[in-house]
Image 1 (tube, rainbow, N blue to C red):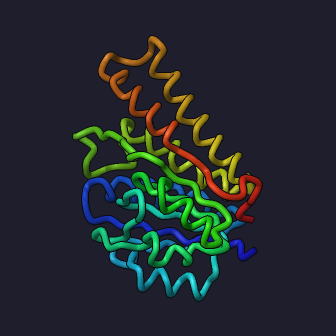
Image 2: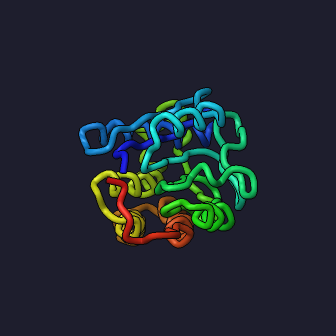
Amino acid sequence: MSNIALATIPSSDQTTLYISAWAENTIDQLKSKHLQFFALTKDRATLSVFESMLKKHEPSLIFINGHGGPDLVCGHKDEELIKVGRNEILLKKTITYALSCSSAKELGPSAVKAGAVAYIGYIEDFIFFISPDKRTRPREDKTAEMFLAPANHVIVSLAKGHTVLEATNASKNYFLKNIQKLISSESSVDEREYLRYLIWDMRSLVSLGDQKATAI
C-alpha cells in the first residue's frame, strides 16, 4: 500500500468550479494526515497526466471530480478520463471515489471487475445547488456546503483510515444530519426545498468491491 492519493480537480464551468473549490479545500485540510495527496488541477486533469501520475506514484486512493455518466468520468473540459471497455483497468489495485454523476452504475462495477479494490460513487446524477451571490466564492456558499461537505466526507473518512463501508456510511450520515437540520424549525421554507435533493444524493451514493478495504 502506497499511502499516496491522486485527485483530479478540473475547473472549466460553474459546476466543476464549485466541485473543485470544495475538493481543494478538503485536500488542504488533509495534508497533515497519513496520505500524501497529488492534485491534478484545471488543465492538468487530463488523461495523459493522469496516466503518468498513476504509473509514477501507484496511488492507493483516487479521488475523481468532474462530469460523468453511467459508463465514464471526465477530466478538464470534459475530456474522457476513464470509460467502460476502454481503460477502467487504470483503477486496478485502488480505492476510487468519484464525485461525478451516475458513474457507479456501470463504470463502478466494471472497474471492480477489472481489479479495482473498491469503487465509491453515485448511481444517479449528483445534484447540488448554489447561492447566486456566492458564484465567485464557492467555499463561502452555505447552500452548496449542504451538499458538497457530505460528498467530500468520503475522502476525509478514507484519509483517516476508515474502511470503504465506514467512509460511505459516514458520508450518508452527514447528508442525514443536514436533512434533519432542514426538517427542523430552524430552516426557512426555501431551504426545505433542498430536502428531496439531499435525500436523492444520499440514496444514490454506493460502495462497490471490498467493503473492508482501507486506503492507508
